[in-house]
Length: 423
Image (cartoon, rainbow, N blue to C red):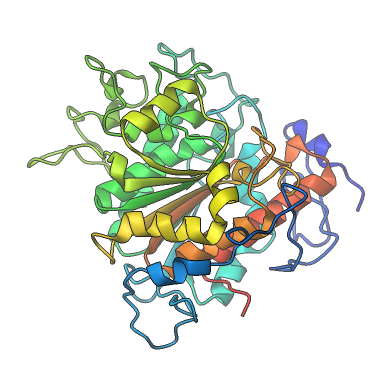
């Protein structure tokens, strides 16, 4: 199959491949090999990758293992369960699979293709094979909404580009995540650019306010319209929800499209008004841990320090090893409540562009192939993971091989966080 994925930039073109039962307005990525799950290959950021503390080995972190909700039965040697329990969910264990093809949070077309490509490559059946009951949710707002070439977004009235459309998409997603999370399901959102996490996280926080967040990303996404240099909203989902990030005298609901995040919201179906002392969703600085940071704006760096937000940059991963970093991240979030639900927001640009080139904001020196998997595996094995999103897949920003590798890696990360293990 020789069709070029770059042709996908011509919106509305139809591609066909015999592996797919019908033609699709999304470019078919060459499937030259089956899904392989795991490989022993580990790509390095540097010529030397091992030391007494490096790599993915747990080292002396074994003595710091968190209290477990699983007991001693069926545990690995490091104290984690052989099969993740996802203990905060209802039975039967159900994954609500939510495609959200948003692209207005950043300047490139193509992120709207991510959800369908993941679906076409078999994500629902992979989840079923892992023991999940799969609740397939219709696309949030549909493709015509997601494609920035299909419509002209209205001008923004603040330094938040396309805020009315991003806000509308985020509200629609927040409603779904609130509903699915409240019913005991696992909302798994497929982006789409990272602005969608404003909606997924808001919905989860309204359902489960105590949720802790692990944000795997090259970037902090801690900007707001009042400090952002670019105005791109995929860099704002954390900042708009973070306690202490909205300047004095300003309100997040003043941003067009974000009225639903204000105390004065009158309510609508699926996202009711805030009553009886309820406040809009807010993320406390102590409730998030960053993993993989390596490209952080000046204002974001200052905020991380002043708010005392826990973070592990690529320097920390090089110094400590990914095993120690993940133990410390989980300890920070679970030390006061070992049964606390966790949300994982995974931006594919956290991975080094050598392994994930098809994304919009690549930064060299990212997570290796194995580190990328280990992050997802370890969070799953905590037993606390209750919701997640994967974002910023953009197959139009690489050649066919790079696009396929990135989508395949996205699939593997998703199955790792949903319980797939090597043994």
